[in-house]
Length: 263
Length: 282
Image (cartoon, rainbow over all chains, first blue to last red; front, side):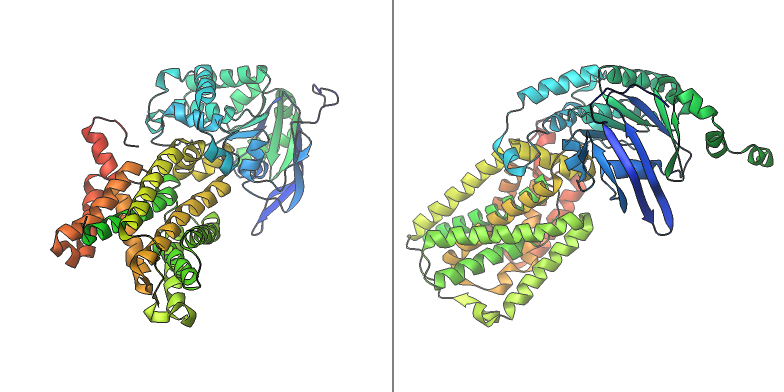
């Protein structure tokens, strides 16, 4: 399988043989994939395939029992969630998590201040926020949230909260952004609009990993698709080719005999 | 100024510093602590012991403050492992362990505590000026802290720790800093108290004292520097003005807490915000 590779640059993100086990369940089993800088990669998988585990391994919530994770060539396997974020890995949550009782604007400003908040003493000694406000305003405009900038974030409808998650993630100036089901819960109009925004952000140079249930939107926007089943990657390639492959059809969409049995 | 007024002002200032310190930990950073009195006691015992060993006043104050801050960071490590109500229970435990330990130590005077603490070398009025000035400076420091990037980071952590991690805030570092700063303030208050009262007794630093400090923070409005300061001052003066409140102190504080939770969960700060039409109290 070929895709655009910019010569002599490290991949944006590499998962190398990641394994993790919960009780008897292998939630990730020698999970390996590589994301090149500038790609928009979709990751799909049926319920229980290990998507959430894969995300948590990559972001640092779970520590793998085996395997390595590299960000732009740097091994970050032992790094915390905030350590990885500081090294350019942003992610959004499937269940939105705004900082409540804080304005939409402040939600993004506090993220834009990531160069101040990486060390406590530095954070204590700095208080100017002008540049961060400018950056936050620009991001809110970019995501169509400037009209609600001063509203309490908790009062926004889901569609806007999903966008706020993205604005906040982008405010840390990441090199890779991992979107955990950003379209879940949106109506088809909102979903189409948001995936359009995702495409634009990617076109501006951001590496995007889109973990999604909404197969239609992934097929439409992703340049490459990874299929996760039982904790490992079983399909990797051009979206339309991947969904046609037998192994993916069998495992993701269900075997024919199962389908007939169900019917 | 008569002696009574001077000593009341000292106690008001001490209680204000205690409440402001807990406000950094629980109000700013959202880490509920029910063991703040242990750090007050830690500072008091440190200072009493050092003063009895012949250390000068200033050095004793500084050493007790620093030592308590370090102890606070150590206990803060617990906050990296446990959260919310579990952290509250852990800090209650810390409070009991402290008092239980101190009671049994001969070298700390056991049940009778440490007495005969040397004079600070300052007159009563000078001592009062010192602690009141310190309290005012700490109010100013807390107002600054709230506006700094550290304060901004704290408010993100208080709302959602996990989300705060994802935006690259050094959450463990910030939590330890909150514990370090808040408990160092308690240690300073305790050290001053040792010189002020000339005696430290284990019972002064019991769970009831921790709850009293938390009451001031909750009634003032978690996170509001001005609200917490006002609450600490009023809650210290009320029992002095009305004797019956002193007799039923716990009952009155408990009732106040319930009333606040019912009518203004945001405390005095929340109440004033409503009255002033949405203007937030710092």
